[in-house]
Length: 230
Image 1: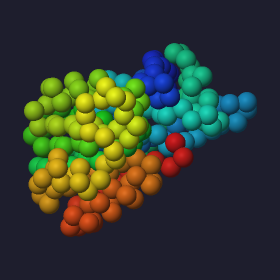
Image 2: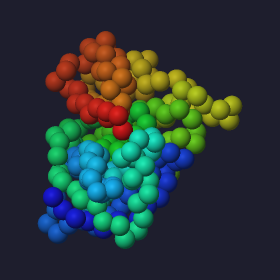
Image 3: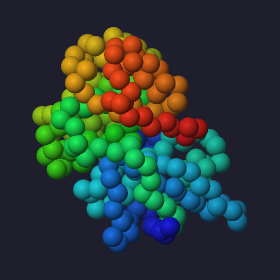
């Protein structure tokens, strides 16, 4: 376990916040892994798993969380620069650092965080893996990392990002609805050739896996990460 100091706190959307902190000396992790984050509150310690949304290529660690009003969320939302928290890890084997030539990524909401780490890593290291991300959210102002994703797609010719919104406003020019088999067939036409990374709330992950199976994608080509309870 490491004690780290918060160096930056900022909002990504109205209810999503990122927390950056110092990277402990000799700390190494793979893109997609998570930390156990512990914060003190009224004499007790609250702990939750949070995916690392920064890349191993960056000189800081970052976790990003939807603020839900639950106790752990409220404590995280109160953190300020200079505060100290504890982290344990890295944990998990939902990782990607260029092992496959073609990858499909399916995500909803805050489930984007481990995929952000992977996409940033591949972009910074100029890894040639072809990546297509299908990313579902509610509305235009509720897309975490929207500008960061635009920059990554601009910097990485091997990365394509397709957004879809379930409650899009009239001005939205993009796709509407959820990530489903029709969207996969339309935007990832070579889906049989890809390894898929699926990340988000358990219901979304379950649905996306079923969509992939209905298209004939075998389980050996599907990796999943469930975000339980946020």
